[in-house]
Length: 358
Image (cartoon, rainbow, N blue to C red; front, top):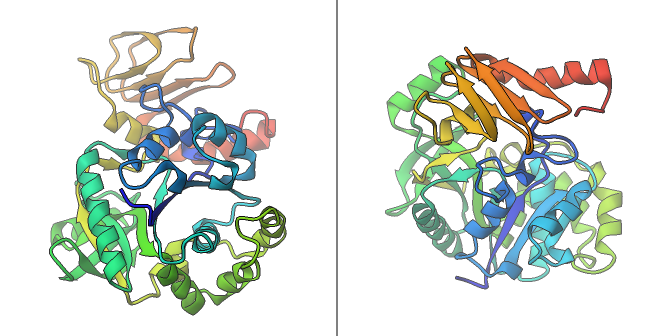
């Protein structure tokens, strides 16, 4: 464990592909999606406690979710809950966090991680994070964890890696956003590509230098608040200037432009848990390949994910390859093979009923 390492958990998303379980008021990172009794956010927080003390773990979220974060991680102080006043993608929130933490410890390493990922092999994960931290401390490097692909998935970005920098680290050749199935198959067959897990490790001055070089517009906005971070003036400054930042991902803003980018290839039982089908894939199944969450009687039902709210019994018969999610005020019944459409369904729901069910 190191007091010179910080972790920032990105927890501001809405998770619209998990509707109706995930809602604007309570997105998926705040839900017990795995039936463990803990939310994805809480599991992520606990996963990093062997890396650094709790006081070095920060949660970056939308201002609307500050109270939810405090409820689920009461160990955090108010200063450890970094509140975005608007959703401007990942580049602004990473830059804001880097400036804020550099004001506390300019020489520290920072780990950026999403709040809603599954990690089944936690010890392997911690070892790989340790390799990335050691490399980032010694080199002027932007490091990302790359996951060994198990299939040609079109829902992930890919990292092509090249020559070895040491036993655990490879140079990044290029990033590719979500490819077609044919291209994804070529990537997997080549053995030269990894899934982009969105987990980054870098020294604070290294990442701030990358912003200054490759995204000076973002850098200049947050540099204005240099004397306000971790003071009572910080939130007022952020509320005024954060919404003026461009809406862009950290991958586009710096990672795809920089030349000092490296990856640690890893396989640690990872899923980004982006959709109901990914939840189905990761959860234990009954003898009929169903994932049943709640009080459910399933008759002649196979290969389906069925989720019932507390206090309600669901009886289902003759269903195959379906997603059924009951949240009391919304019932979703959808073919598992078409679950990528669910994000678009929320737009239809909004057009017909307004914000009530989102």
